[in-house]
Image 1 (spheres, rainbow, N blue to C red):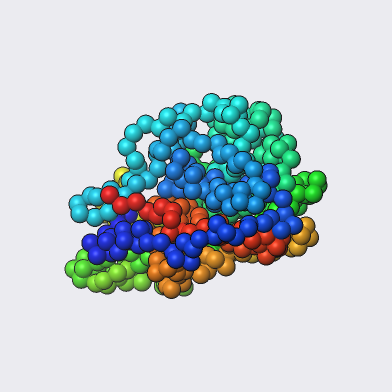
Image 2: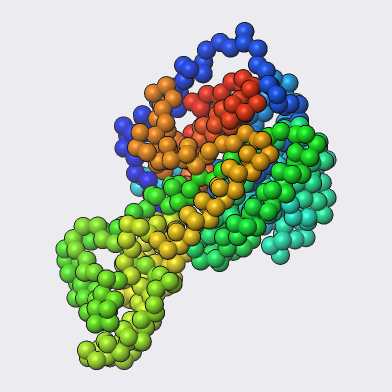
Length: 505
């Protein structure tokens, strides 16, 4: 993963900010009676995916679970008659599940004087053994779950994990091999619920570069099951079913919409022009590769795909499956220019659907570890990914693919807003909060600024997708505001500065 170089001054500032308190939250409220308004918090159930479970730093682990937004929410509800809130705790603070290849959490380490995310040392002790006997559990956030998974019978069947039909996290706390998350939630007769689901319905497509294919052999909660974008009509149907079921006995609740997944650090940290070249190298590449390719592509009206490089930062060379394959034209054109058939054929094969990235393409965070390297064992001179050989499709969310994500997200959010109105539920505009965080000004809490910047922003964890404890606190407050507004309760907000951010070595 990309090495993050942070100056000593910046690190000192971040460490100082972690110790700050927000005076707006530190005031004595013991003499204020906290009430539930028209809501009943005596049995609160939280349904969702990794964002509900407390997942962060690429893993689900104890400290993250203890700082999940539902846990924060439940602690405030307990001041207004809320009951016990149990979470299906992992066995340790590593988060790995060795039996199915789930890696440990990410931590910051120092390598050659710079900070870089790396996997924590040690062997995880969590297994797929059922812990249901210590439940039932009120935090029913399941990492990797898409919208339709919450209603799927057998989603917690251990025998289905290897087949991709079940989720190992739900296996641990499912009531039976045939139950669904929704059934287990309803069986507890909740009086109040939160539902935040849907970001995985587009996230797994986006984080895999819009390929629709799993790029890893290990279980990855962000890519569980099919990576295709969920049909908005399917999404609407299942969410309506969940809300009808959850409210059937009079329960009230709160639902949240989906932030634009392409605004998170996983897609905004690596720039599209991440190829630094000196003048001599640029000139050599223009002579041997970029010049000949541009000449033949220009002859066929496709010259904009490739431009000559220069000293400084240059666009990454990428593979784009959505553009016309020019293999035959490149091969034929180069042969006509005197290039031998073998070389011309190789160039045609390698660069038939290649182009340089633009500012509208998003390069995923994990690409930082392979740009300029040769993990695929390509022969020289095609041995530098993103420079002399197109970067794999899985590392790039193109403008075309990003538009598909945006269209689906808009449809999902329209559905969520409408259904919140239909069922009279509190509604959290998480997307609007993400827009705030993405701004340079960010969000301020007593002098501590939170933004969507990777590592230094304080909001996002080391996986670039999930939040830190502080980030989850910001979200918890959005839920609290929405609940108070709809049900006339007066739950106090939590202090984001009191929770953990990114830990520095």
